[in-house]
Picture 1 (cartoon, one colour):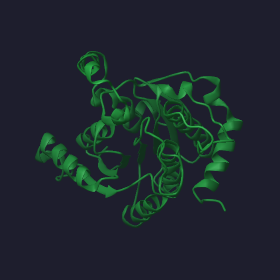
Picture 2 (cartoon, rainbow, N blue to C red):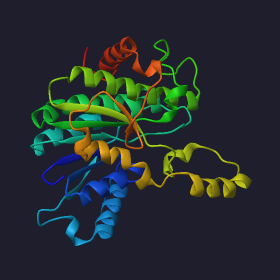
Picture 3 (cartoon, one colour):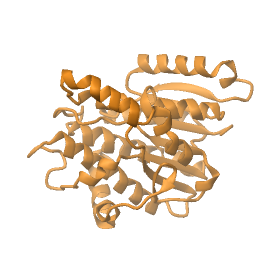
Length: 290
């Protein structure tokens, strides 16, 4: 990855942090797009300490922290404006950040939080960076979804969950939206040299479940089970790293992966009419179309 620039959203913890460290190890210039700048700077220092002095400099990679709050379209636009001003190229965009099963909350722009962060924030981010990705082709967009997409439905009558809200179903809806977005984006980018693929990381021990309430008495058992059966962040990040860097997927686009292998999707995640309608509505929601 020497000479290549990678943006990773939510790179200060979990899957994003693990991917940032590995791609830095491969000598990439890694831009960590994070909501909490202080936590991101701390993570960057820890990664540098883990990898040692050889991680950066002398033809090695570089770790750069940039503020990016996907719950704010204003922040997304500011982040992209800075990237377009400062970065001559963008080889890989990893849409990794996510919020999981939170209580009903709204983003700065009035969107239901999970749909707003997991789908709409990344939708705007990717669209604003498309020109740079095309100019840097061959380049790649990697979209982190979840197996839980299977329980989601795109309800166009209530995308903002104002009629009803179920935190589990709304998370699944946002992850289904990620896959449909990746599919439609891949279709639109055919022939440009920019590939787009989605993935699920499996069940990973991360802080994504901070809104999940586990009874106090059950916590020791849950912790034991998670250590025994859940993936580490580095194990969970392997498919993101593979899609970002492997020559095996050069030119592969519009596919879905798990454990570094292509996987079949349910029909609802391959519905091109729904994907196009979701794209059109998302364009209006984020202000790309008036």
